[in-house]
Image 1: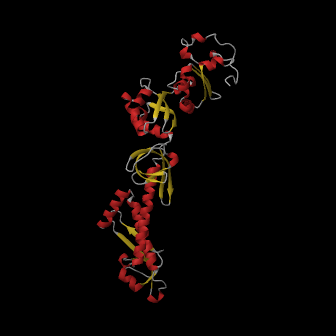
Image 2: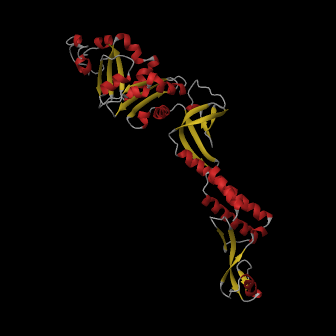
Image 3: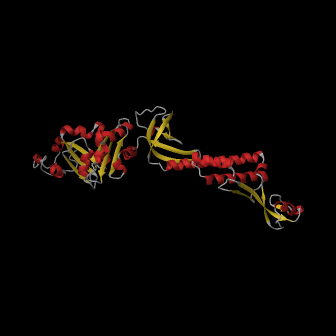
Length: 383
């Protein structure tokens, strides 16, 4: 038994995650390469390795001829007298297996064989790492900040470094070397130099994956994230839905005393997160999406994917948000183009009627408006 070879293969399999079968094939190819370099050809040379004991045999298949004078090629033929020294059963015209001692190979042939094995190990190592991280594509992993490469950041993911480009960084975020951060794997490419991994801190899916990891109800499918809209570093809105009427989707995501959502906010360096209930009714969904602003009335056109919203005068700036952020995120979350007006603006709009707006849940609140506005809402009246 070749104990040294077996121990070496065990170590490679354990540390590099390269299968023994692949390593055996690499050794076989290296021995064939060594034979080719030593003898000039290897077409008739075979290599056999016992997978259990790691003992190996290298032999050449040679044709037995009558006399030494008939031998035209020493690599392919052997005279009967020499053949008898190998096997007493040798006969003219038969094929004889002649063992080759690998110790007799020259220095160059041995070095080439070693290079073949090392090259195969490097290729398999790159392949293993590529497959390992390709499976994690579109997922979140924890990495360690290595260094800044220009405006990009090198992130160590364990067995390979990933690149956090300037476009995928959140403005204002500054990282220190050795700092641990979570990143979203955008893409894994297989290159001659090994896998190239691009990661992101701005992708909306980063927030979604963080919630999936933090909230048990999302992980087991009780609560679903139906939609998400994000402006990285500033604010994120997510709409959630519960498949169990006894489970509050928003409450599950927020956690006791906000523990769950706060851990995600901390990971995102203080980014604000609005969690709202998803609803099949676009009017109610838009109302929820514009939270924390209060809504007077909503008219949603599912065909045109547009919505007109009326809010109290004092809530207009809150509904629109700083630089229009709240309205912009609500539009992305719902998929509707939202036009927001204050009550005064809506009242002054020619042809405006509250009857055109959906406010089933607010009948009592809006009774005072009934009959106050007459005529029909005209196209372009809000201009």
